[in-house]
Length: 382
Length: 144
Image (spheres, rainbow over the protein chains, first blue to last red):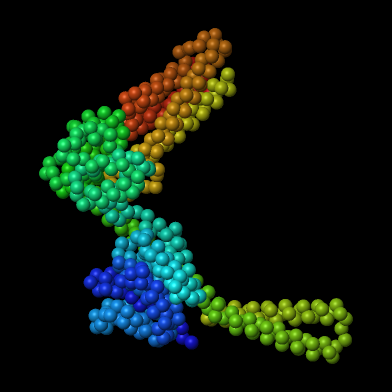
């Protein structure tokens, strides 16, 4: 008795990367680690979530001893002394552990709030544990509830919808101009790290990347491009309003989307006043990101509400599941008693067959109604 | 002929109103993108522009059909294709404005704000005519 859900682990806020990298579970060794974990005394089921920002073990085990068992498993498995690891570990039990799993799965505990990868990582952790036979009915129920909750959070709050990185913000803005970016020509000016990253994001969306060199004819390239990412170290403007006005005429005013990530800037800010030109510099993108992050914070509040609703619903399900066998037994017994009392009564009374049948039906109905009311009262109390 | 004249004129007016709605959406999206406002959930600016153009072309074709049918009807009813009737004159002004907008879009390459603003001007002219011309008592369209 006394089995409960336990979570032991650490994340980016609890431990530095030097420690996290020492206790990462590599994918190829995860199977052995899971077998090792469930072979511990007091541990019945276990799943290991290991990402670059968190290492957490979710287990079903003895309420009092499972936490310590998991902690000593981590020390032993990774050969790290207690004094180094223990101060950084957190420990949750029961509803708190469920809350942690739900918050992690819904990306409320992530380094970047609302990032979408974590759901896939938790699903993979669950699938691995299942594959290696480390998971049973208890953790299956818990993880299913966490996935359901994450789905609700994603659809009802759209938490991860707006971009919170410079490169992704640039892609989202470009999509607001062109719709699909497939086949769009993206001119890359300079080899800056951020510029290359933005270009890589555009490439992911099937845009055609055209890196410009010093000898390239910029005017000719601008006439055919749809997107421009500028991140050169030039200390003067490469694109100016007068030349761009002429280029726009040659382009027949097709929209041009410009991202200027360079400091000092490569594109004269006055070009933003021209029609069909959409210019964003690094500060504009940062502003978009800051506003999106603020929006995510608001949505996170709604997500927390959803999580609490789901925890309550899970608690009710658990209580009902625990009470179900007792209720069934009590119901069977009460029906038996009613039948016995009725047959005793019928022995001493002369009734027709129809009257007997009606009395039997009435007794069954009365017992069921009384019993139903009692069960409802018990459930409410529980 | 009367039916063609009426139906094409009404359909053209409805399509022009829809063009005006897409133009306003375009201006809203353009403003949001240019002023780094929170981007509202609208289709891309190019999609709105292309929808607006398609609506305008359809409206223009119907408007042309309506004018031609009306001219034929005038010949049957009154003996001449063309009168200095306020509604006929106004229709021709509208037709010339929209023909100009379409010419500029296809041959000069107008897009975006300029194209949208001229389209909105044309629709406003059309609306003024639609709301006021039936009050002119000397018009052959008086009360219509």
